Picture (spheres, rainbow, N blue to C red):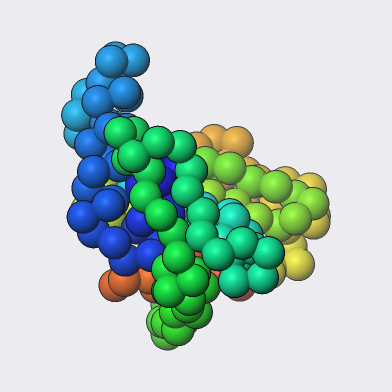
Length: 178
């Protein structure tokens, strides 16, 4: 899984496919279906870009190359060229403010972060990270905590952030009274 994640961010599709194959086989042996294993590997790769950047940070300063594990298990030599590709900053695309209906599955009142499922999304089990800037979140029995407690849908005014054409994160500014 580590090598598949590194290969994904280094844009090495051949190495990624080889490492994914090993990871999927291992997950299948643990009882996961092929589809679930593939989705798990992709989610892991997407959520660990920062970790991969930290891992390859030594290349070019105190190390010339890096390899995690053996070639038989999908490992490959990571070079300075790969480091440059991994550390590339992708432009952030922020959409226009809009109203979305969501179901809040996680809510942190301290950091004001949340995880939501967007109602009507073509991937109904997909959860998106969010940040709530509405100050009403600090008030007891606010619309967000009430919706979270009841696992009810809530309409929110937000700006979505996109990655590769899909909603990656939402920034919630207000609850919309229906």
